[in-house]
Image (cartoon, rainbow, N blue to C red; front, side):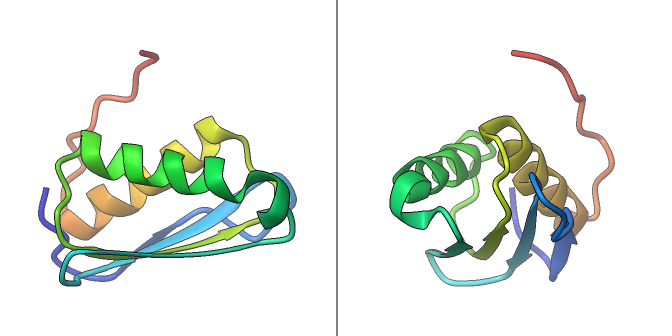
Length: 95
């Protein structure tokens, strides 16, 4: 998937995450979280796994985490990517 523009998904409410994606060269990931020491590696792995699954090669991704679960982070990254690509054709299903 190609990141064509800047897009955002999520909120800054408790138990959510705000994800912003922008065009970039390679994968550049920035994470801000009050629980970065406890869960930073897992948040990073979840974002990178989602990018890989959607075949994103070039993107700048910023995550502001407010205690979101993995499934929420996955959904926010996916939504931001599809918004950036100008596509609403994602089938939301449990895997």
